[in-house]
Amino acid sequence: MKSLLLLCSVGIFFMPTFGTVGFQQLSVPDPSGKPLSVAVWYPSVGKSVSVSVGPFQQLVVADGPISGTRLPVVLISHGANGSAGSHYDLALALADGAFVVVALTPTGDNYLDQSYAGNQQNLTDRSRQVSVVLNYILTAWTHHDRLDFERVGMFGFSLGGFTTLVEIGGIPDVKRMRELCTTRPAAPECIFIKQRNGDQLNPKALTPDWTHDQRVKAAVLSAPAVSCQFGPGVLVSR
Image (tube, rainbow, N blue to C red; front, side, top):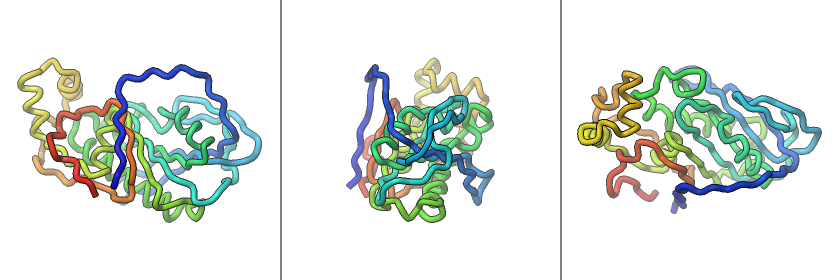
C-alpha cells in the first residue's frame, strides 16, 4: 500500500547544517525524446566544493564515492519553469539522512525551455520521463547496486505534485480543466494556459495515456497544480 502525504501552507525557518553529500549530474537517454538532465545526491565522504545545480550553488563532493548499502531512493519533481536544483536544499537534507535523491529537469518545462508549458503533452510526458529516469537509476546508474529497490518514494511541488499523483496511480480527467475555466476564467491555471497559447482547454485527446509506476511506494505532495483534474476515486491503491 502506498503512503501519501499532502503538504499545505507550512512555513519552516531554520539554518540547515549538512554532513558530507556526494553529487552527480547525469544525462539520461530518453527513447522518446531528448536526453534528460538529472541531478543525484547521496551520502558520501570527501572534500566538499561549490558546484552549480541549475541556477543555484551548493557545497557537495562532486562525483564522490557513495556510503552505505540498501539506500532508499527519493524522486523529486519540480514545478513549472524550475530545474533539477529547485529543491536542492531538500535534496541535501535527505542525502545527509542516507537517502539517494534523484531530480530531473523535464524536457519542455524548465527555466531554460518552456516549449511544453500549457500543453497536455507536458502533463503526460512528465510522469513518463520520471519512469525513464527511475529505470536508469535502478539498473544503469554507477551505484545502482547500493539501492533498496523496495523503498522508492517521490516528492512533487506544484506541477510536480500533479506529476507525482499520476505516477502513483492517479488518472486525471482532462475535461475538468475546461469545465473549471468555463466557470472561473480568472483562475490562475486558466490564465497560465491562455498566456502560453496552450491546448489544455481543448486537448487533442480526451483520454490520453498516463504513465504510472508501481515501484513508487510513498509520495509527498506540496501544493499540487491543476489538481481540479482529479475527481473522486481517481487515485487507485496498487
